[in-house]
Amino acid sequence: MAKQEMTAVAEVAPADTREAAGALYPVLLDLRGWECAVFGGGPMAEAKVRGLMEAGARVTVIAEELTRELRELAEEGQIGWERREPRPSDLAFFRLAIGALEDRRGNAEFAAEAERLGVLFNAVDDPAHCRFLMPSVHRQGDLIVAVSTSGKCPALAVRLRERFGRQLGPHYGRFLELAGELRARIARAVPEFEARRRLWYELVDSPALEQFERGQPEAARATVDGLIEQAEGRAAHGSGG
Image (cartoon, rainbow, N blue to C red; front, side, top):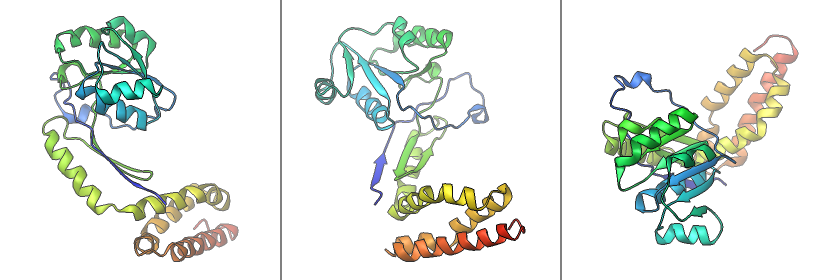
């Protein structure tokens, strides 16, 4: 059963020189196995480290001192810790880095070096030196809803994430678990793309989600199986849906 997980990540504004939110390209990164750095070991760094760890990144914190939570993670071997001041040259060893330094005066140098190296860099609460934004995020199993106000009003992003969290219950996660199990079967049974896309919309619009919400997983699976069998029959007869 999918467990509900709520993650609030502070939203950071885009660069001051960016004129329109249309310039932003929303994307979800697969950070599994990526070497990622957090510069700084204070409270700002904690949330960033947690978010990176949840995404499966290999996290190294570079800071002279750590909060108690970060120190425990380092002692347990869950994160790396280099006990010193971070340097722009450190960026060469990472694919993504977050600057969570109390003193922002060095962010320009870090950002410039990140641009030179092609490293994704975010300076917390320093919009002029961010290459990417960190939205407010709601997770429900494999469902991810990320909300951004392009840095104009992070509090609104958090409130919207909370609203979506109340509306999108655990049944969405359970539906996605079933969908994940069935993807290979559907691909084999309905090889034609348009017919397969039509089937997916039929599944999403079917009573299956409501049946999961009412605690009727067997009925939901029966609903889904019936729709797949119908699509298989159409495909076998060459109707394409």
